Length: 251
Image (cartoon, rainbow, N blue to C red; front, top):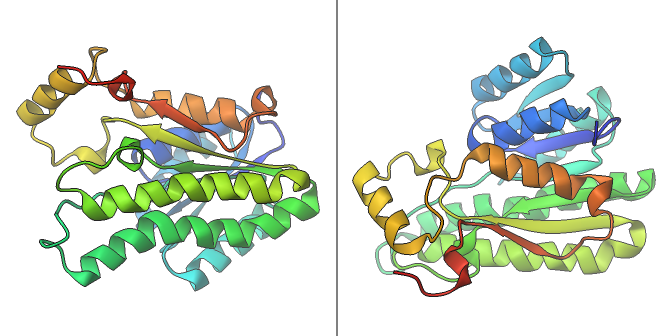
């Protein structure tokens, strides 16, 4: 088991990439704290892990709120042990140009997609340092590498996540902390559920060289690798899982 003895805390763990990662971390031996804004979703994931013989707890948290984040870290440490793996995965993906969205919508996206990474890392890092090291993974996205039309707030937030991941890597390397960003392309998850199938297929056919849908499980397996000792010298890097979209212009 690649993560035996580790304590993994996953935000946005109730569905999609977050849930798949919770299951993958548990299969590899980690004790898992499943954090989600909707408690029932986190509880369903935790119950499944425990039914399969793992150890998991469910935590309700709004990761854009510092009090919720502090409580999330404290409860994880109290019930499972200090988190040695933090996967900041919670996010929203609003559409709109800057003239189309409200200030409140802009703030909500930046708070959930970017500020939450700062808050969670700030709370977890002292515990990781005290324990001798740890791993922080952050879900960014290909729109953080190249902006997309009609996705202004999301593109800005995810670009921030990428450089925050690098900043953590630089600032805490001597504390044995590793930090990397994962940039998925189009993933078949509930977050993308409103994308009409015909429009989705047309987008993928035009922009993704490799045919087929990328699954949340594939992202979870990448997260397992980056959290494991096999990646012990990898930090401050951006890992793109997009079927080749970022390789260049494709049509």
